[in-house]
Length: 330
Image 1 (cartoon, one colour):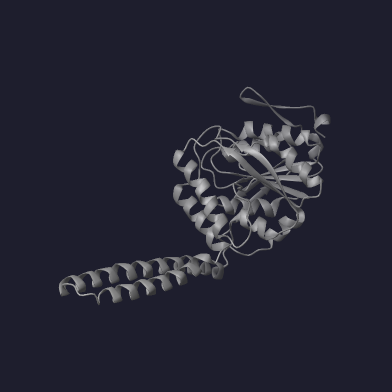
Image 2 (cartoon, rainbow, N blue to C red; image 1 turned 135 degrees about the vertical axis):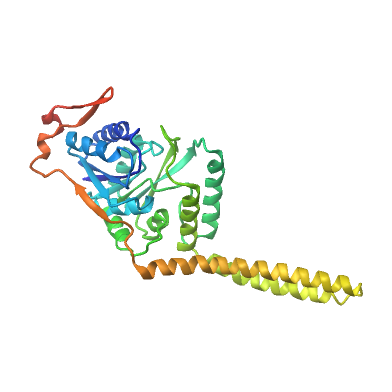
């Protein structure tokens, strides 16, 4: 069986259409499947819609979190709940197209343990993010101590072996593409064109994306710390040059004023930079020491095995739902 894990936060406009697209894609893949929707404390009617889908489709598993835990918390809860021999992670806003799911499954069937969906192109109506995403991936590729595929988010397939390895990690500030690359195993890449959201606005704030980027850099690279040492030697060199330059005959006032100002600003800036980098690492050490869970599951809604054959597949007729033939669904 293949599990599809989808974090959901206030996506009432898209859930029904998204599930129908996933169901059609998984049926074409000719495999047993389940889709695990993780309701991450939605304040709209997302949970009610998901429960309605579950009453019509026995493939649907609904994980209800106790509150909003964020994207990584919801994904981690889904990974812990999924039962499949392979687990696919994707977002529920159609930016990760469900039509790619059979390609991921085919690559897994050919022997890949981890199949990464890499963006060949992306459409993004938010122009600032469209510029920042490629920049982030280039910076991450330069800084990372491990080879992490560029232009790849959470959209991927992992075998049960890889999922168990990721679940076994106890760290709290997670960057999933990095963890996925760190565990190793046989990798394969599937390229796709990333679309813009079908409806609504993105749920991750700009600050959350910055925090996610910092988690990525500090979790998989010591280079920022090493950069502090390099800047220390550079500052020492510059201080020496400035000291030698002050030996050249000039007005005493100019020599003293420029020397003090340059030294204070230069050394002060380097100290603040070093303290900022160290602060990022110390903060993450603090998170690890506290050992708080990434998320707490309030309830898992799953059909009993004896009831599954009695429930048909979901189809959409206009704005409503309709059961397909129960025998066909079974």
